[in-house]
Amino acid sequence: MRVVLISPYPDITAFGVRAISSFLRQNGVATRLVFLPDPLGDALTDQPERYPARILDALADLCRDADLVGISLMTNYMDNAVQITRSLRARLMVPVLWGGVHPTIRPRECLDTADMVCVGDGEEAILDVCLALETGGPVTGIANIWSKGPDGVVAENPVRPLTTDLDALPPPDWSHEEHYIWDDRAGGIVALTPAITERFLAGGTVSKMLGRVGYQTMTGRGCPHRCAYCVNDAIKSLYGAKGYLRWRSVSHVMDELAEARRIMPFIGYVWISDDAFFARPLEEIRDFCKAWKERVALPFTCLGSPATITREKMDALVDAGMIYLQMGVQTGSPRIQELFNRKAMGNDKMLAAMRIINSYKDRLLPPSYDFILDTPYETVKDRLDSIRFIARIPKPFRLQPFSLVLYPGTKLAAMAVADGYLTDERSQVYTKSYTMRRPDYGNFLILLAKGGRFPSGLLAFCARDGVAKVFGSKLFRPFWELAFAVAGPAKRLVKRLLGRR
Image (cartoon, rainbow, N blue to C red; front, top):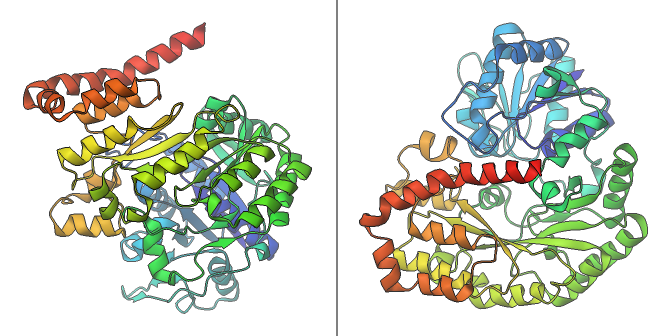
């Protein structure tokens, strides 16, 4: 058996395809990985045809000896997966299986294009598909796998129990063996070498900020929270919330990092991208930090939530080498916090976590705080509440503002459909980027505050009801539209000029 696994994501970390490749190889299935970074990146537009014909021809050549092709996708990469699948189908007779978040949430929609869909975790399910194809057996009864027969009847199978022992799974495949990438510098799809990997990883946002090449990993799966805008809630409902949050052992993580550094000695820091790394119990974090200092001794970054950050955990992590932290705030409005199902992480709790983080400011880079903008249920008061909250955040900090995307399967998306706010998924979801912020006064203030240098007192003054009423009026709308139109190009120009110096 040979399986070709394709990733359309701009970030070549691509946990899903790398994890499945490792598991299949461990079980005797040959794999080939092909990375096709979306040429649009975060700048999404309604452009279904992402890849030129010469790239699709080269991809078909890499799939000619495959018994199965797997494509990983999230909602914003649906067009990529459709184009790739249709292209392969026109050239080859090979079954195509889709997996990832979007197929998990919308398997029937995905079966309009794919032959099979994996719902939920994919390692064991895709191995079972390989065994069935190898022996000529049916795939219609495999847990986690949906398929459509020639008669159009869909075989819907339940999910199998979650793998609770993550140590039983091998670390992601960074071997560079049978790995390929679409690299414009090389003019097409070429073998992925450690040197090319270094260049792609160095281009990541955090890597550029730190001036180091970052390696991204996850020490667990799942999230302890059930935020209404997040697909984690829908996946929890699929499996049942119990046991959804799982952790790898400390030694398993350290073994992965040792092997990664052997293959890629250029790694300068590690990005731990668990949704809520701080949710690990304190004693586990202390064990993790002890092993980190002994076996890794590199700077690292991680994500936390206001409900899980404590001084004891911060002490251990900063001492071990944590240099940067990202935390989800999302909104400073109590009403929207309740809508988001984050009432337990209200302003007092968030400020308490921020003060703890701020007490390490001489040893950390300014933390990043995520905010969600453009929620259709927000009133002017809700938006001003968020801006006033930002004015209370202890400096230094950075803001990471994201325009809300109502992803399928989330409670907020279902509510927005019922209330008439979500009427065109193509434009409002599938081709909408989180960078597409609404050009108005409130978002302009958040843009000013993004770097954490805007005077807090002045920000609070600008968020006063009377001031906001004037500058948020229809009279000033053309000004804010113009300001947002020129902000991006102006920022890119400044970066280029500074780069030349």
